[in-house]
Image 1 (cartoon, rainbow, N blue to C red):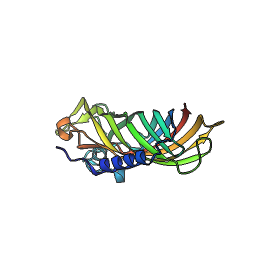
Image 2 (image 1 turned 135 degrees about the vertical axis):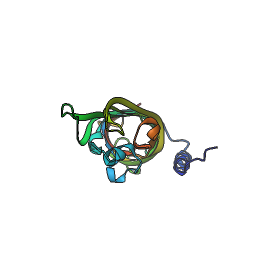
Image 3 (image 1 turned 90 degrees about the vertical axis):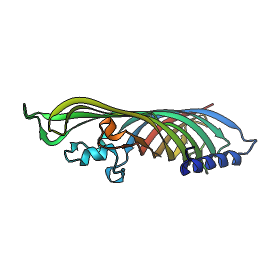
Image 4 (image 1 turned 60 degrees about the vertical axis):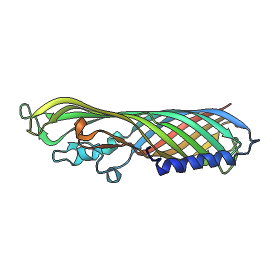
Length: 241
């Protein structure tokens, strides 16, 4: 049996404690939360040395691109269940996809002097369960909150275009890795009601921690891992019913 990671146990305890702490008589109000955001990938200096993007940037013949190039928009939708005025549970899904052009740094095609170029593509569909604690106010007033949760992140990464083999020859190909990564999620934000306790505008900073396995050299990648960690700044609209 695969041992349960410590963060899974910790998140499970937190969720269980939140359920136990919720008064049995508290009213449960469901809602739908949707919006858009921007994903900020974990920066180069904080990434795993075996991360495929780090290896692409530091290999003997490095590619020219920036980790910041993977900053891109996201959309999300979430079902919520408020228990009383200070506790909310949510299950949601987000969608992120980006294409980053790259080229070999300082190397060109000997035939026509053109760049030896590739496209790097990353797609993630995080499915997240969250519990949010709102210590102050009520649904009809401004409410800051903090949250903790867990995410399952189906992902797909591929590199396509021109590459250089060990003999220095240029060839065209596509390399793809897919999988599902799991990790904890932390969040902080606020709800700002609009004309009562039914509608609210939201802003939230969410940070996910997760790493996928690319298969490394078996799939023709320089790195064995793909770091999926990063923060997302979300702006949303909440409807409670």
